[in-house]
Amino acid sequence: MITFVGRILNDNTRMKHFWSILLFLLLLSCSNDGVVRNPYIQELGFRFDMNLNLPLYSGLTNLGSVVYIDNSGIGNRGVYVIKSSFDQFRAFEASCPNHVPNECSTMTLQGQNVTCSCEDYEYSLFTGQLLNRPDDGERYYDMLEYRATQSGNIVLITN
Image (cartoon, rainbow, N blue to C red; front, top):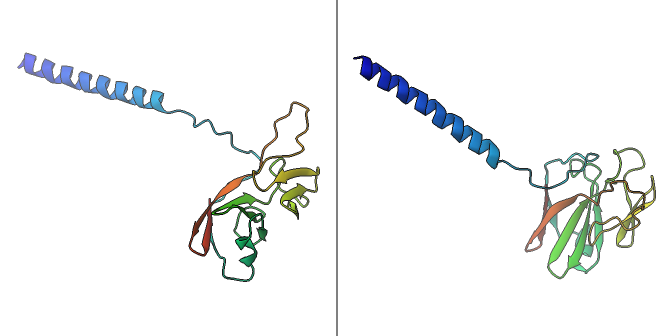
């Protein structure tokens, strides 16, 4: 009887060790995905369908054309969408990525670039990159990009 009880206690101890080691290995396997998140712009979840047959979006049938979507709930300050190649669209947040959103942070369209009126930072809508990045050693962010997928005449913008 004593050996039976000892064996059960020994098995319980082994199970505790097994689960402890498994939990430890699970924690070790977790890692950072290496993506640096922008601390200024909240990443909101949304979905927006653009019908290219509608007059408002028909300009996006031409390469390099840009449309600003300022519907409520689409991004923080709206979204700029550009037809960047024959079968590809890109969508970017309209709020300047290098400071907290405020009254001057909604960027304005200038051709195929956008400009933040707070500091006159200029960004390319083809790449989302800051074009006039200051050389002062500070961290600067490129535009926040959303997913843009085309299915027929519908372009789906999501985050």
